[in-house]
Image (cartoon, rainbow, N blue to C red; front, side, top):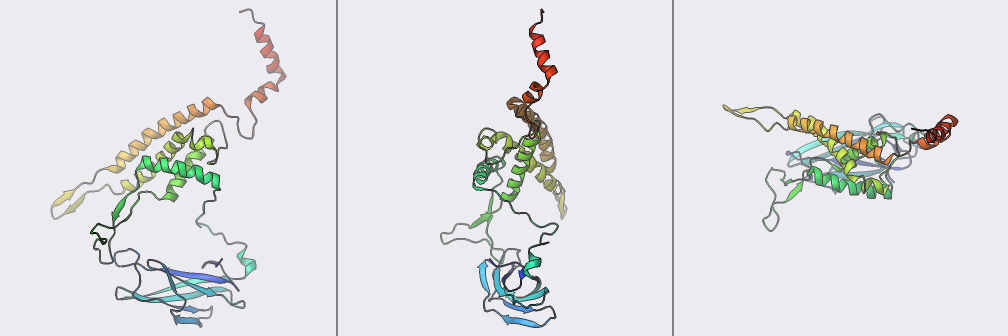
Length: 302
């Protein structure tokens, strides 16, 4: 597998990529295949400028695979991309770090790096089930007309408008909300260790987990909508958008209180054993004083 910019190991391949956008902010292909120029640590040109080996992976996304020499100097090398989008010349300069194999295996995690989910097949089955319930409740999936590089709406061969996804929440965000809901479910007394792979989570307790994720999603969106609550004035005319921030905030507060109370009732009804502490029955039965008190109670006259 090829390496990325932050870990270009000497003697191995590194994938250098660039994403181009049009004047409308949407991904756009270049007028011609971009040219790449690679310079070493001293600024000496090693490759290019050339378009050989540059391939288009997606709309506006181009890759170039560079074989790092085994004796290459360690440090930040630069790759310069030159092309034009809609007749406008564009030049971008990036850097990639060349290291040896020993240093690449240690200290590669940086503060703020994106953490990838690591779920097994059984957990993914449970997550996908809960994710479908959560999407149906939030109704966050949406579509919008696809526009070209000039801002015009794109139509297909039958005259119908071509649409693209415009969701309120991405799948990664919804999975984060589900993970928080499961964590809170396990924290509410008594402490438990349920996983997404447990069928009881995405079957019996699906409503509780989805409701918790729903509350977190509404709270997250309330902050965004609060920043949009302002009056628009133009030419003596003013328009006040719906105050969704206040509505979502009050809705979130109401649901949060009822959700946590219901969660306590659920955990109290199943009475799971405290995680890593054994069960309450074992704690009480192991005490001689409590055992004697139980026999004395059976001998009560009243």
